[in-house]
Image 1 (cartoon, rainbow, N blue to C red):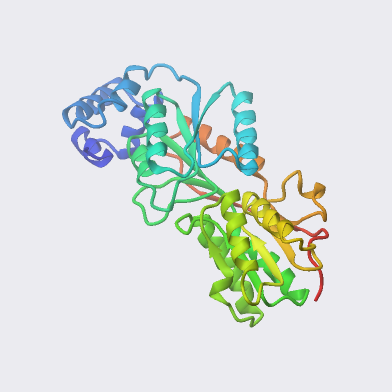
Image 2: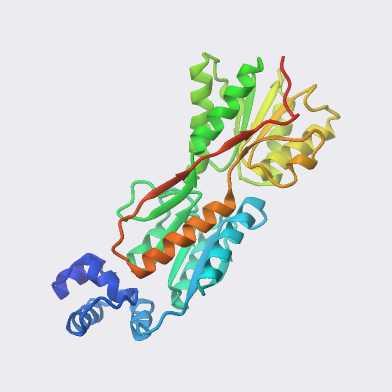
Length: 336
């Protein structure tokens, strides 16, 4: 497949101009538009997707795609709420695809959204070098990445996420200040950028306070409930179990709590716990959960705002929007 750069060279225009033509912008003269369309046809550039969009360039479908890894995760439900509310206020509808961290399924949803000629997409990449998302951007679609960014790829894209490293750092530092040194970290899939950032926050806090890192206490698997339960069981089976555990998302937290309760352990008397994601049910747990708060709603709303800006101006400079987290202290941790 020819690149946008080759199309631009053939039509003797800038890459931004090619992008404007593909994204239905009304800022291109008829003569320039015709040259770009001819170059696209001659180079056979994404014929089944770009050509369809060109045929309908005179009108927007006012439709955006939202591709997420796990809509069972309450965090992504909050993201959906933020995206949908902002889109609705601006007369856009939202199509949602849930790919369950399966790259083949992710590609199917992305292909469908492109064939449906959506005006743009919001997506959480399956990993930092997600070729499926990269190709969508190269195909000329406006994209905003949420929760997870792209690393070492040859495209520019807006990213909206929280400061994961800082959020985890604060949680681990809090546990250390309570006297804990044997602190476990149950984290998600090792290829997800969010996982790497949260592990980095854990390690940075331990290093700052000169607490030796025991790699056997860092447990990684999938980012789901079952993994949280299994990894917590493995930690509790250790000859010297941890005195505290940090779980990297709300599903891992729920899984870890299941294993803790099955052992008949009392929180925080027997083990302290902090979770990343302060969900609506955190106050209803017994005891109420200390958690790192991030706003999925704000992430979704900001992503939708950026996407609509990109649809109107494809040449807009791309940015990373890093939102802050907050440690909400409740009753699930005790001082040693």
